[in-house]
Figure 1 (cartoon, one colour):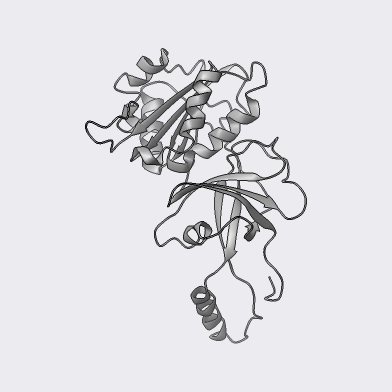
Figure 2: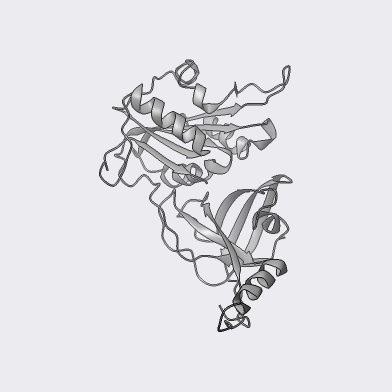
Length: 280
């Protein structure tokens, strides 16, 4: 993009910090509405690269035989969309700030009314597209991997028969990282199909936390999942979705396939009932 062209096309219209390094951002395009998309898909957010990155890029260009024209360099990262497609005014993102990250510290410095780039293209295959209606949806996330499941539930909650039950299993290190907790606890009271299982690995002894203490990977092996939900995982009735830490995904993929008989969904196995998306 030429240096004299404004690279930004969107504005932060809401910023709700859960704590200083975890927050919910709503971003609206300056013109028009988001394209139609399926819950579970993602897009890119971007900001102009810091001066030191631009300088390094220019230095590399000068080493070549021909100097490239000055251009705006954007730092981009992909984020799953937490809002449902029926919301046409903005896109919502659940974001954690990464120490020494190339983008997130700058994102967290933005305020309401500040501008950024939001890719008009929304893509991804981590959706309910091939999941038959009437299934039990068991979603397992760590950290901000919760985002695509919020979009899925909100889009389809009013569609009769789309799912039998929607289970949110959300694993974090400390209780303060349980974003959307109040919303999900309210849903368990308002919608009998919703089960919310917060899991914390570093809850101090004697704390008031009443959720599951441990990793989400042990929920299915120590009997806790069946005890909480009243149901045993069943590949005939359930579709399991995993999103977040790759180590969590690798472990649960192995266990759910070998122990419980789930089949990984793939381009060759479109009727698979185990779906996953890694965040890094």
